[in-house]
Image 1 (cartoon, rainbow, N blue to C red):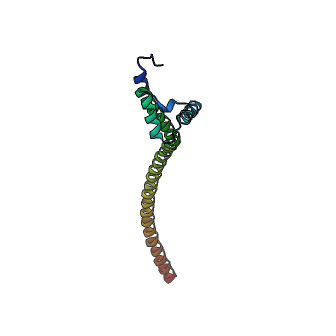
Image 2: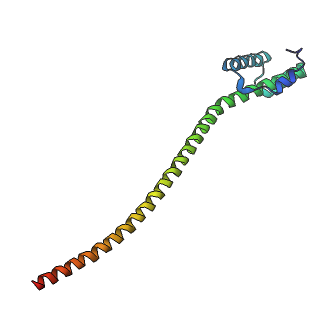
Image 3: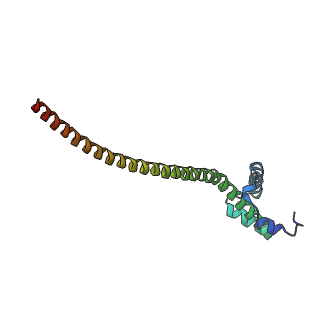
Length: 144
């Protein structure tokens, strides 16, 4: 690993989302054992102790600690991100359905207004015809 000329680039571009749970757990156990072997409890003291042995080892320890911390955060955030994405899709679907329903409602209101206008015209005609019929019936009764 140390002979790898692209090691620093690989570490910089490491994808935490690709880290498997068992690998993360294995890394955490090794970090805990390292802390125990060094006999320190404070994470800053571990980094200092590692750096006193080797600057590269200290930097690598810091990278490992940060990567495992990022993994823990990713593991907590990823399900929430997926749920938010699903909720966003449901919201968009609901908004589309609402727009469709509102369009249908507007069309129904327009049809109802037209039918009510037609009904008023027909009711006015019925009232006029009913009045004429009553007038003719009175005249017929008066003539007989």
